[in-house]
Image (cartoon, rainbow, N blue to C red; front, top):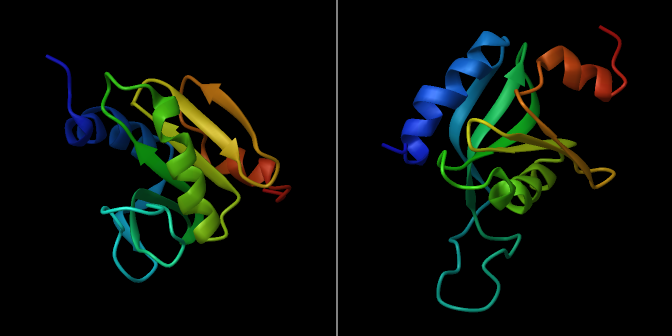
Length: 131
C-alpha cells in the first residue's frame, strides 16, 4: 500500500535525514497573514505558508525540504520548496518523495536529482564553507 505524505515523512524521509546528522523543525510557519485560497495569487509574499521541514546543522538553518507522498513526483514540490527557501533567504531547497531528492540552488536556479539527501557537510562545501 502506498504511503501518504505524512507516512512517507515518517518511514522514508526522517530516518535518512537523521542518519546524516540533520536536525529539523517540522511544519515551520513562514510569514504573516493567511494563504489566499479564493482567488488572485495564492503565492502572495505577505501570506503565511508552512514548510514541511527546515533542516539545521549545529543550529544553523541551511535548507528547506518540501515532502511529497511516495507515489508523487518529487519535482511537484520544487517550486514550492524554492519559494519557501527564498522567503527565509536560504540558498538551498529540496523536494522529495522519499526516493528522489531534488536539490535546488536558489541562487543559480540549477538543480539536480539525487538518490539520497545531501549531508550537512555536502551543503556546506557547496556554499564554499571550509569544514
